Image (cartoon, rainbow, N blue to C red; front, side, top):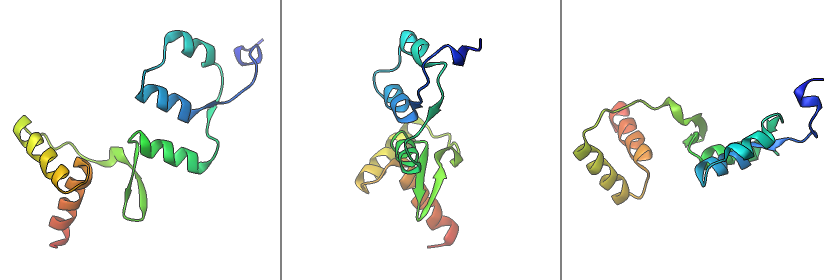
Length: 109
């Protein structure tokens, strides 16, 4: 008998896993209890919202993109501190601030 046939069928919500990973983490015992079950979402909206909240996705204007599409800047510690302060001053995240400034440079705005 296959492993998945020996367990009660239920779907583990990706939002549950993501929140646990972003918070207190998941114990090995918890993983053992759920590892044989499928993982899914309650809706497309739920999928998008949880990925936005954990930083996997981001909005660029009216387009949703994978946040991994950014590049590494290779900043020094002092440059990172300055970037963080500039982003805070402008009321945006560091990634959003860099994106805004890069768009300005690329579009000569």
